[in-house]
Image (cartoon, rainbow, N blue to C red):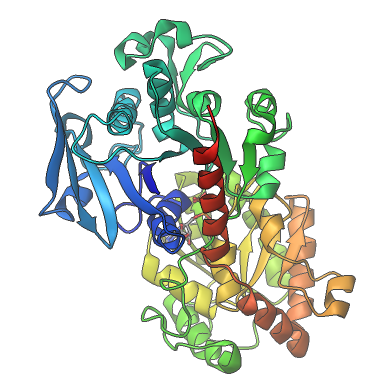
Amino acid sequence: MNVLAVASEVFPLVKTGGLADVTGALPGALAAEGIATATLMPGYPSVLVALPDAAVIAEFSDLFGGSARLLRGTAAGLDIIALDAPHFFARPGTPYLDRHGVDWPDNAERFAALGWAAAAIAAGETAMTTPDIVHLHDWQAGLAAAYLHARGAVRPRVVFTIHNLAFQGNFAAEKLGALRVPSYFFTVAGLEFYGAVSFMKAGLVYADRITTVSPGYADEIRTPEGGMGLDGVLRARGGDVVGILNGIDTDVWNPETDALIAAPFGAARLGRRGVNKAALQRRFGLAVDEDAPLIGIVSRLTWQKGVDVVLEALPDLLAAGGQLALLGSGEAQFADAFTAAAAGNPGRVGCMLGYDEHVAHLMQAGADAVLVPSRFEPCGLTQLCALRYGAVPVVSHVGGLADSVIDANEAALARGVATGVQFTPVTRAGLGRAIQRTAHLWRDRPAWKRMQRNGMAMDVSWRAPAAKYAALFRACVGESR
Ligand code: ADP
């Protein structure tokens, strides 16, 4: 079976969040299921550089205002099709934002172009084999479902995966004509969303199946509280919506072989984590003290991630004798506040701003606990990495966080199955109690070790999730139309 994946970011070619981790790792795991994936993505500069020997498989004389080509080659072990459209992608900045952090004004056209190219491949208009399944990731790929629906002809089955319903790709209705979407699609039953053109809704309405990245989030997004205005659309899809918990790349995230950490270790050599803890403390300017519980955070600095609540609960963390190391990038207000917190608490609070894979690995290897206090979290990957590295995850009880961590409550401790700490609500009081509980558990060294080993024994790889995607794809292909 052949799958065409369509995504705006793919690790290690370009990454702003967990989406890239998924699109970078899923093809390898699907290969073990006998499924070949080619991934269509924008030809950002970093992508084209990685594809020096790519073959041209299609050309467009006018793709929304400029000429473009599809280039196919292998990069980082992945079968990549880059949409080389210089008028859209030959730019500095991130995939979505300019140098000043402002959305590119033509994001609608940029990702419509991606969808258009996907539809051309799916319709057999390029020099590659027509795929059996088109797997669309998040709003950036959503319009492909509408274009394929508009073509009406026999087409591959379309699966749309929601990685974060908060980012919907909603654009002014005036864009509709320029996007080459039939005007009769602009209805409540189509891709109209409160007067805007919604790329996310296009995916939700016109795909054959919808998945999201955890069973918990699949439930939450069908409620008014978690549905971000799209819960009704999702409820109307009934059994077409399923949650499949993400995995992580267990070759990239392997504490026994990790070259980015100070001292590799395994479940049988947990003592060596101490070397990593000391290295992490030095890196963040913290007192090198093995008797202080070190809490780490690796996160985008946004409201979703609850980092403002961490700032509020900082006195509780310090009162519990803890240290905090934060690696993050995002909104200036939070970056400034953490910088000030570090300056005000030398040796006890450390903060590094920016995106840094190296430090992210050291964090997982050296922190005693990794905190993920999200207000909502479709899946969350940080806590999965933490489980694998023996850093005990302390997470809010939402979405994929709730699905992947077993709370150290009395029953779980008695049965010896706990892997972390869950808390609710995401408030100073809720987080403060969780920090106290974590510090208390940490001081019970045998119980803590047990939690670490339980977490490390969990299978957080892509093996089981890939089997679920494979089963879904097979079921889709087997269905009569
Ligand atoms: P989201 O996609 O919402 O940002 P996820 O938990 O799904 O959240 O994925 C985030 C991924 O990015 C994880 O692999 C995490 O370790 C990584 N990450 C987040 N912030 C940073 C950072 N500042 N430096 C390095 N890695 C980061």
